[in-house]
View (cartoon, rainbow, N blue to C red):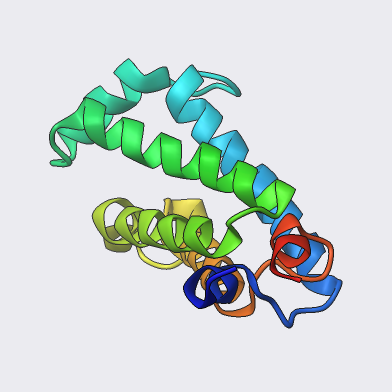
Length: 144
């Protein structure tokens, strides 16, 4: 296996990162399902796209597709432990966009639709980007 691919898949993280990775992945998948499929009380692509357009993220449908795709498929990658670093990078970017375009003006606390939740998910994603998928992952098995 080539060195760049091996470095993407390699991990020195222990078992604890697995729990963080799976729970974060399921959380991201749920939010992506809201945007893409209208599940869990979400608005689906059309509704999410209209909302994104209304806050200045244009074209709204494409932005909804990108955010929902990053969250759903990135979350799936975290859950199964495959290509965790690239998935975590895309999820961190998605959370930073959400934080600064939607939540920042509302302050820190989530009760006022603030940025604390997006910040937490961005930091979890950054941690996975740095540490890798952990011992219980497909990435580790492939890189070995």
